[in-house]
Image (cartoon, rainbow, N blue to C red; front, side, top):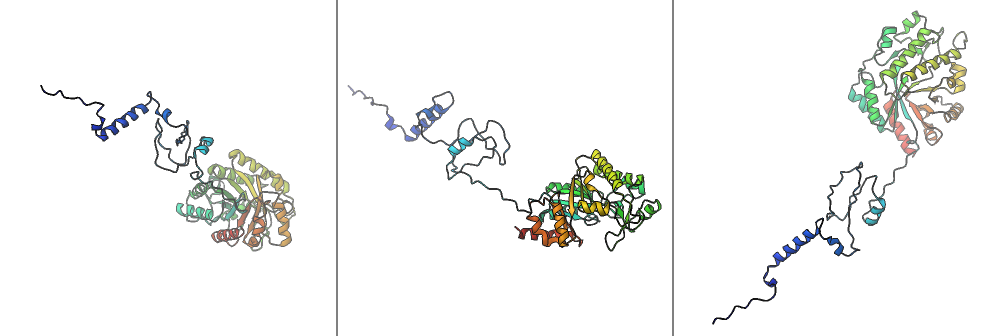
Length: 412
């Protein structure tokens, strides 16, 4: 009789390859970890640290692409967490999960210099300094240049000597001219404003020479024939004779009012218009007639009309201090209802400058030229001087801006 075959005792695991055992255990772990099955996390030690990326329950704007998240936590091989820029993140949770070594460093904003704190850091560009035969690229490059020199406001001439630096229907209908003689491209001011705003700058339209003209004005002969000019010669400034258009004449007053209204409607994004000390009648004109009241009435009506046409535009003046303006130029600007006043301080006489400085502290700021650059540190360091405007008397604005940057950097 043959011997009966003896069955092996036990499970026989010793004969199963180790790779199969590992595969079975791994598959079992996967099955238990799925939703609805045994929560294997309960079998883990409670104090085992688990890093879980924060996921906001509501969508928020971020500065970096949001990471893709799944319904279950996933392991990560990166030891440095990605900083979250979400404004709704749970700061307490982040503080608890981040270690001192992995917390992103906090950056402190750079403090502004006294020059950078000025509300307006402006430069005047006379009528022909950008416009004449300049294409779009040239204009935009010039704007960026002034921005690089620390300028935040361009005050550019758009009117002067009795005519506009843009095509004007009011000019055409009233005087038979569309503009001043100039080779400007029609959209030059649109390009200037657009680029300035892209650079975080402002553009103020400079109504240069105000209500005065000289014999080189294209409307001089017409103004004489229509008797628009106040009798006499205005000799406020040596070297050039000016003639003052009489705004007491309704036709003249309406012409200026219509020009201003047309401008703020044609260029609705302009930030401000500015008129200078040529908005006045020199006291030495023949006849010694007091035109203060009529000039005030004219300005009030013109400003009201402008605001009705475009209420967002600021009406500014850069004029002599209130005493000198009223006493010698019939310009009682304190009653004109202007938005901002910048005190003109081109006279470098020590006593006069100190007086102008005291006035500038009470108003929007001060206007100087290169002749006062030796006083720049005093002005920049004075927090009561809110804004500084610079007029390049030498007619070289780019050089003036470069010098201004150098001086303000040295004054840090």
